[in-house]
Image 1: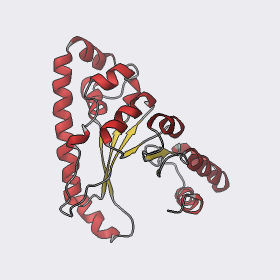
Image 2: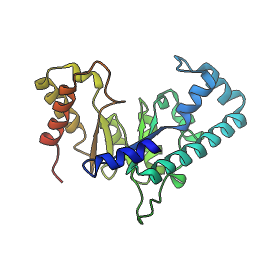
Image 3: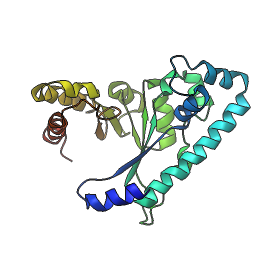
Image 4: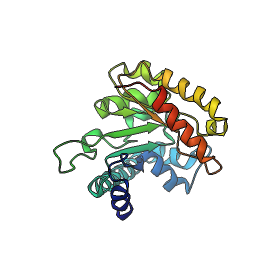
Length: 223
C-alpha cells in the first residue's frame, strides 16, 4: 500500500494508477497445487471429492481479495483488476456452480469521493465464463478474446482485451498492424480498454512498448 501511495504521488495525475489481484480460483490453484500446474488434478479432486471444503476455501480467498483490493483503493488505486489466469480450466458447469471469482456485490466500491471505482476482470482462455462474469459485474470490464466476448455479452458491455506481449518483439511497423487488429476486434463493444496480455516480458525493447502505446493513441477511437 505504501508503494501505491508513493506511485500515486509521483504520477501526479498524468496517468491513472491501476491495482490488481489474482482471482479466487487462480489463487486457490496455487495454494492447492503448490504452484503452476498442467492438469490441476489436486484442485479438481478437491472440487469434486470435497466440495464443501473447496467452497469454504474459495469463500475465504474471495473475502481476502475484497479486503486487499479495497485497501489498494484506499491507498490511491483509481481502478482495480482481477486476473483469473486459470479460469480456462473450468468447464461451463463449474464456472457457474462454484464461487470461482469475487462476487460483484462484494466488489471494491467506496473511495470517499461518492463514486465507484472501475473493476475489471480478466478471464484467460475462458470464453464460457464471459456471460457469467458480465451478469455479475453489472457492465464492468471483461477481458479477451474480444470477438467471442462481444458476441456472448452483447454490445452494451465494456470489453478489455489484449495484445499478445510477444508481439512487441516485432518491428515498430508490424506492431502498428498488431494494435490495429486488436482495436478492430473491439469495435463492436460499447467501449474497449486496450490491454497488453499479462504485461511486458523482460526481453522487450522499451522503444517497442512506446511504439505500441503511441499506436493505440493514434489508431484508437476518439470518445
